[in-house]
Image (cartoon, rainbow, N blue to C red; front, side, top):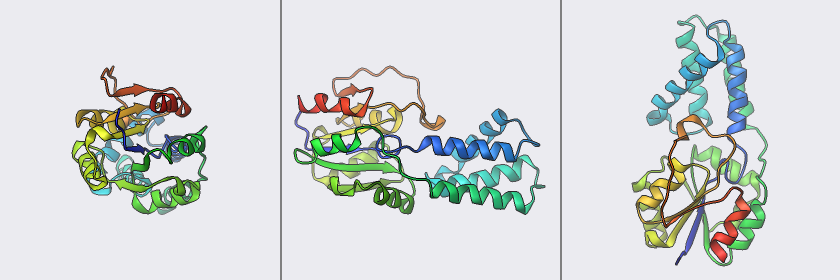
Length: 229
């Protein structure tokens, strides 16, 4: 491998993210339990979230707007303002959650930063992701920060052109096969999948991937021998 740039996803690759969303969804379902049971409401919320991605993108703000829309829909417009205030409060709590780094993150970044250009390539709301990166204390490890509205093949090609490298010189490390691995492999890059125990339903796919440019690591520290050896 002639790798020059190693990119890391952020949420659930560098730090905890999805469990906070799931906790918030549980509070939302408890608030709305008189209208729909939890499983049905969660399914309805996911449908609304996915439909709104083109409008709001990824992140907490769009998530809370989708919750408000779901509350209005399932209550047939009878939801009161106090419940809406509580949903907004859930969002503010989510925005203020602490940044909990995953195991061995700094060890891995420190081992790679002097040998490669190390970057962040993550989806989400610009302000929110910048805030999380600052709170993480990891900024000094990265040559470049790319907060993307989507992670498709064209989005990665745009990033690679910006970095002035070829796809074969790019490696992506992340927890999502759908967003962090398959698009990168398809354009000729390299990818390592590091699964996280909880994955947003929209990012979950059932596939068995076999490719010479693909690697799998159960834990983040396991990427080091795959790259450095």
